[in-house]
Image (tube, rainbow, N blue to C red; front, side):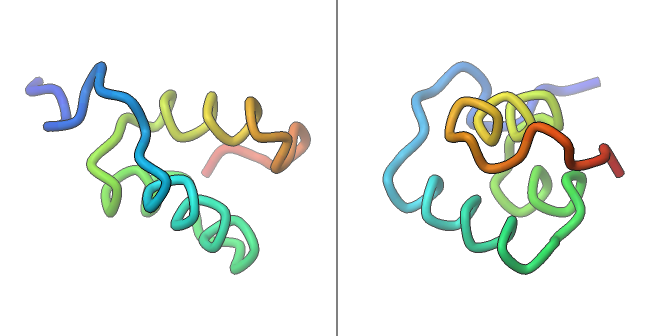
Length: 59
């Protein structure tokens, strides 16, 4: 399986803002990952790093 195009690259300020907005809206992790061209694990890891939610379920 091919890796997303941004695999291993730092998160931009715009991507972080988008991640936060998606979290506020309750967007599914897999949808966030697809839109940001990041892996599901990357989205979850960044969210935890930012303290967005440690209890949100993976969907």
